[in-house]
Length: 392
Ligand SMILES: Cc1cc2nc3c(=O)[nH]c(=O)nc-3n(C[C@H](O)[C@H](O)[C@H](O)COP(=O)(O)O)c2cc1C
Image 1 (cartoon, rainbow, N blue to C red):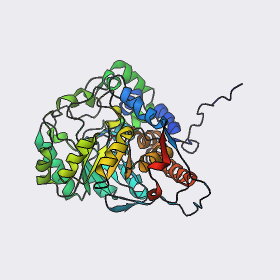
Image 2 (tube, rainbow, N blue to C red):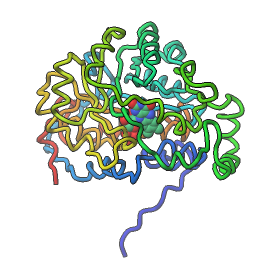
Image 3 (cartoon, rainbow, N blue to C red):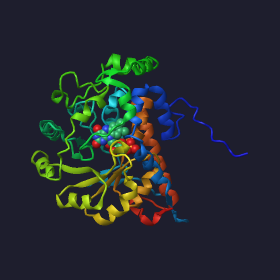
């Protein structure tokens, strides 16, 4: 009889062994409308699935009989030291998952020595994150129809000491995440079904909605129409705000307001990477937005080898999409990424247990990455190279 995989039966952070366990904990702890916002991909969710399947097609090739007792994960991200080649990705509405949302993610990143990226659509003001979290802070930028909003964010982020700006370019048109849309009739107005489900999660209801009030798009609320700043049901307001007019010419416009490091998030071709270099950008994030924008899109890890070949070390390449294991991280580093952005992996930790849950997620990924390095015969991430990976 074949060995049967036991389902996850723990119920605590301590018993969670991997990111999938944290996902299961988060799924139980937060109501469907928050979990579906976190989890959902666009339309048929083909991109979302492809982001995971792509890792299945890459196998690791170890070298044996090498002393790896001195291994460590320390690396350089955008020219500054980091404890691991990891960054927390920008995600909006984090306080829907846990009342500490953005702060829990930022503080844990600071403690573990990796950068944290705050979303334009965060539920905590960027100044509050800078004052209460510290660490290496990056600001994600959406350039929406009302350009004053982007200008305000850039100027405030610069004043608050954010180190880098991450301009997200793959949301010129807003993706359709149908799971999320089904839960709301208007901003702040869940459907009856979604409301009943919230009542079945009294701890979340009290902590997130009653004690702290419905999360709002704190960073940009002064630019939103009255009554539209509730982060609950953002999918009913956001599509109309995004600007299909953004182009490469806007890099020069951004540079008028932002003198720090500038990364372009949403690049997936060698041609666009070349363009980013030519315009003096400081790096790119290869990303399909976690499968939430274009459906049937390539996975970033699939195009990484060709983009890395074209870039040839002239600019750092950061990558995201579907990273849930140390093996995933090692594959990307071997194929030419300087660092990996974590989206849902750390959000599962947040939903599962706030700051302690995020710490648990990072511990898991640090430990797994370190273990994989050792088994491949490497002492540091700089020893990884494309020969460690084979496409099957
Ligand atoms: C719940 C959620 C919210 C997100 N919000 C933003 C955002 O506000 N800005 C942005 O540039 N990307 C956003 N993203 C995309 C992430 O930055 C990142 O590209 C993606 O999550 C990576 O895929 P992964 O979740 O599989 O790791 C969001 C992703 C998720 C899951």
